[in-house]
Image 1: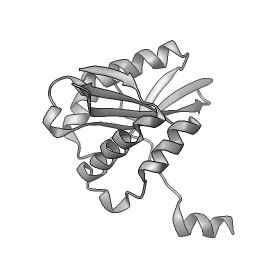
Image 2 (image 1 turned 120 degrees about the vertical axis):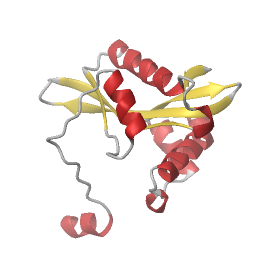
Image 3 (image 1 turned 180 degrees about the horizontal axis):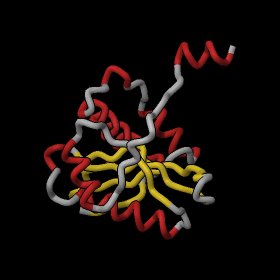
Image 4 (image 1 turned 180 degrees about the vertical axis):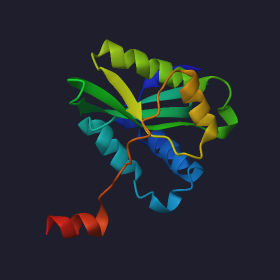
Length: 154
């Protein structure tokens, strides 16, 4: 297994893995992204990704982007998507992606790595607990999109 940075040329693999994550999370009905969207996002630097590969096949992804952590006075990384295809789970690929992302976070001068996890995803929560990630239970995520976003902007 190898971990490497994704490039815009990897848009097909990124698309496939993120779509598989949406299916796993039972959110495929909300998935609208295209391969071209991922190519554009990677090309523009709007996000970056690490790929876990086995014999040249992408089997896992960590997709992330920088944030501003105002209370900490520095930049953070937001891990948007972490996913390993089911056939390759339990082999350490998810942990390898997290380790590589933790090294990148420190090497590039970020002060923290943050992410969300669905409350029903017990295997992921157990992994995050084992590595010392703390839950921020006092926060509730919000999203404004679609018609509601347009209405507020009007």
